[in-house]
Length: 132
Image 1 (tube, rainbow, N blue to C red):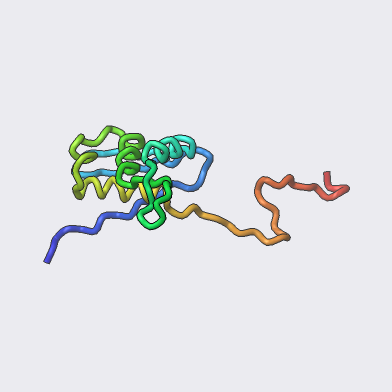
Image 2: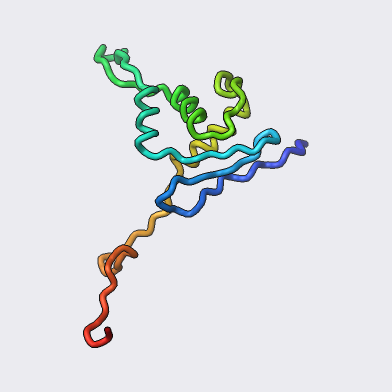
């Protein structure tokens, strides 16, 4: 029987206008992961995209190399920078970084569905006449 304990799931901070930040201890070292802003993420997607011919149609199409994208994301969002071998070799440590980055960037955002009668927090509050 294994004595290893199951790691905690990534707990994201509440939604805000600031990028989310998560800290994790991996192999005894504390790393900070900072959510990419959409423009920075888009730049990494472009770097990880190449044109390839579709084997069935022969037409050229854009293909994202998801392994390269993850390596670029690790390099961009993790502080301190992980050891070089993590970025270049598939290891359990690489998978730990990937899991956190996936949860941070592709996890579900909390959403509250409002009815037509509900006013959002951004709606101006009206004061009934005579109660000002």
